[in-house]
Amino acid sequence: MKHVLFFCFAACINLFAAGEKIGIAVNDLQAMGVDAPTAAILSERLRTELLNSGAFRVMERGQMDNILKEQGFQQSGACSDNACIIEMGQLLGVSEVVVGTAGKVAELYTVSVRMIDVATGEILLSENEECECPFKTVLNETIGNLASKLAKKASPYASLSISSAPQGATVALNNEKRGTTPLSFQQLEPGTYTLSLSLLNYQDTVFSVSLKKGENIECAPALRMSDAYQKTVKSKKTRKAWTVRGIAGGLAIVALAGGIYFNSQYNSAYNDYKAIHTVDNLDAEYQKVETQATRRNVCYGISGGIAVLGFAFSLTF
Image 1 (cartoon, helix red, strand yellow):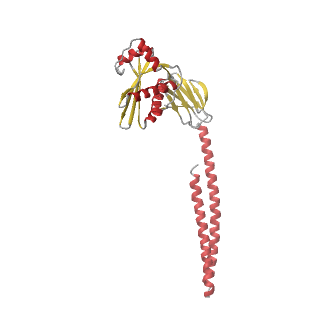
Image 2 (tube, rainbow, N blue to C red):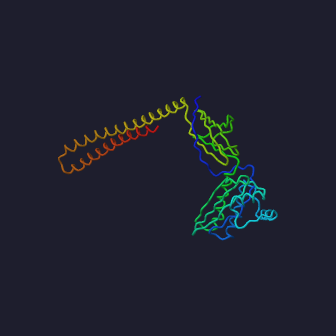
Image 3 (cartoon, rainbow, N blue to C red):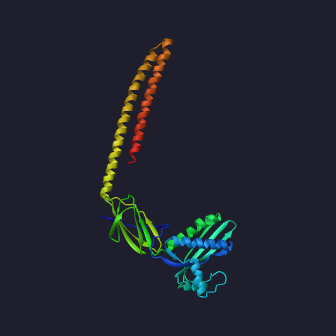
């Protein structure tokens, strides 16, 4: 059986596959254009949303303060430089620290966050959200969007969604049959996977997908008919086309016959009209001529219309 090989161009969507949770501490957002209480409220909401995402173990602010106080950690102003962040993360015993800013210019709120690896000081993730909206919307939606983005990217797993046209194809992942389309795979390890789709009367479709941490790939290949099935479908379409043409041709002939009949009636009426010499009967006979001519023309028009429309419709098969 023939196999179709192709590259699957994938689109990532916001989907987090729950796995091992990452221990993090969220430092208060630095206020830039907003007052300190506003920044503190946004920071606390960010902790809550990150915890609710299911991707992280989030240290409470009170616990952070107690540990840092016990360790004698001295912080003047916002802890924003890498040295300060790394020291704070080491004292708290977390693997990553989330820091960022909350700002406002006119009516535009901007919230930016970074996730920093305590061991290396590397910025692992960076996201920002803007919203020209009331503070309530920033609190209820913007912060949640940021948390979702961080959770998705921080997931150690990837997800894969497969559909096909037509649906119902058997899906094998790395040569292991897993179900039929549409089908989703959750908590896949990052790496390259081989997928094959098979469906009766269609060619097998085989392709590879490379998955990265936190990604959700969606593929929707269009399956190709097998040569034999393609010939069968084409033959059925041809038969349908000729059936339509036959029916249309028959109706056109009936209408044409009607036109011929009314044409003979027209000729007879016209001859009678020419033979009339009295004024009283002249108008009545002329009316008969017009009636037969109209009937003839209508039948001819219907005949031609059916023939043209029937042939045009048959071309769609």
